[in-house]
Length: 116
Image 1 (spheres, rainbow, N blue to C red):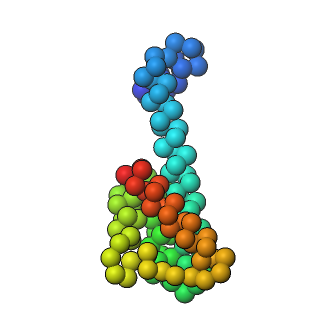
Image 2: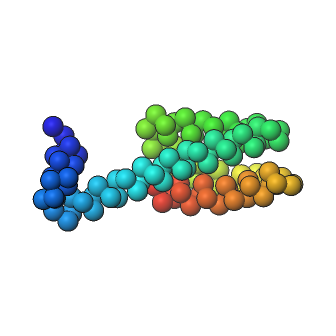
């Protein structure tokens, strides 16, 4: 039985120490944030691929796959896309896709920074 299994058993039995329940809550929160990040990376990749920004589409699509596989180094790779000339922050699209990409750009950065 793993530590997480024991903590879960104690939690449901109502005898979990505060530290254990807080640890479990943090773990669930991180998992939720990671899931959101992966979904947003995939959405950004789809928008970028449909707008002829294939390099960035592959960048973020690849990072989503890496995160799904448990490769946390992808978080560092995501953050490397921001800042400097020719970076992801320089990509400009018009219309609704551009507005959504701007939202995703900000959210992806914030999530990757928080999870790093």
